[in-house]
Length: 82
Image (cartoon, one colour):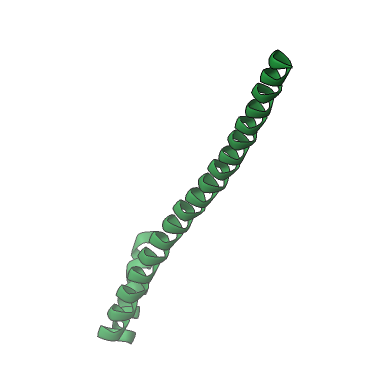
């Protein structure tokens, strides 16, 4: 019985708004699809930005480690020759 009521409402909407109602519904459907696509793109962009930030931090840490190792090696060389 519920589906019959729903069909009646849909029929009434179609009669009331006609072709323009169909066009509006189609535009709404397309807009919802675009919104969903945009949300996915935003999520992907956020993930990419977070990954770049993490990689930047890792790179900076690796540089610091390399500089520290270089200083340690220079100190060892000084102690051996000195």
